[in-house]
Length: 243
Image 1: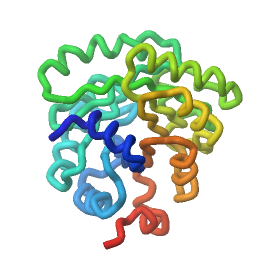
Image 2 (image 1 turned 90 degrees about the vertical axis):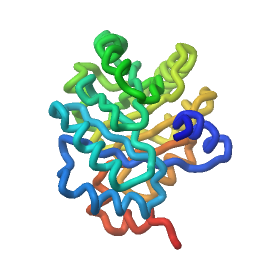
Image 3 (image 1 turned 60 degrees about the vertical axis):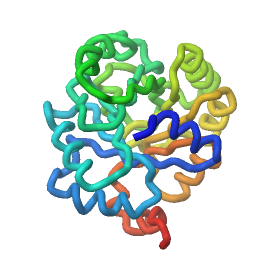
């Protein structure tokens, strides 16, 4: 497989809209994998992300192994902890929680991950991760013991994202969090995108096609949606590729 990051950059230059379906091993029933991935394969999804804030040991390894049996889409780890690293995936977003000031999630977890990554063939993609206030406390906030960035202070969000790029991050990820009441706003996405020269990922709280379109039109290069669309037949139909 070609470099996933290189492919993302090439598609962004071509103005292609990228979509990742995020599967949380802690919330997903392994027996549903075949049927769910069959749906993903018929959709406009370009990537599958796997990960969560709190995931049991080996759960990610087992789930990714099963997913790979049913799709040719790249499977990218979106880990909440080093225990979620598995060589069965194609790549890993090496997340640094730039919105917080907990050293464990800025660099500590990364140091612990090095020895595990050395034993894998995973493509490591440095990613600046910004948690944005979304109207409720998310699992990311609880686990990392950090406070989300205020939606009102857009300048601070923009500056933090740009600082991530200047530090060498290859991607910036604006995250409202799992189960967010409110998605990242158009204003935030647009102003962050205008300052970056690297791809921008936006996720959290996107539950319908209008919110998806808003994210793309505001400047998101890759949008992440959760597995909730599986149970929303109208949303799923709008994501299905016409043949």
